[in-house]
Length: 232
Image 1 (cartoon, helix red, strand yellow):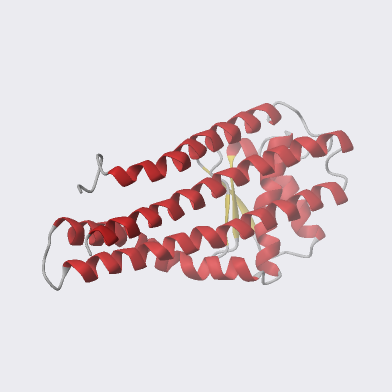
Image 2 (cartoon, rainbow, N blue to C red; image 1 turned 180 degrees about the vertical axis):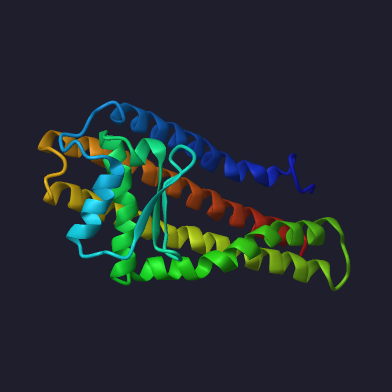
């Protein structure tokens, strides 16, 4: 059973691939739609982020620009919210919703939210193990070396399991950040009643990409397990 393009187990990934493509389309389409609608508050994404942090007593987190589109993120290591130009300087529903989401992570950090702490602890380890997982597994699978191939495949699977765990932990982190963002936007009156639905659409669409990534990693793990079993 060849490992690669013509491996029959690749069909396991097709549903996740389709879902991932659809999720990306949904995010970009929803973002584009609500980026054309100016929020009633008239605040930029950066101003909204600062306002939410001030309202919640967070004064030790900075805000800076970052290149790209939808490349926005919060870095807990240096306590910095990084917003892309359309988000940081934009005044649309999309801009303030995405900015509020990133500040949702700031609030998680400030309050010691467990899943965020776990994800931050896993990140540097998973960064290494996920890169090593496939080379280890492929070498063990392709070269039948007695006493070596088996443990190399097992180690590759173990390393990749760390990536699956990381994606699983990411889901509650991202959903909770969006929940916090929507609460901050509505409770403060930053969005009018008729704008709440738009902000929620933006936040929900973004969450789909994390669901797609988790599904892809889980199915990839199942695939590796099936390939490993075929060698027993």
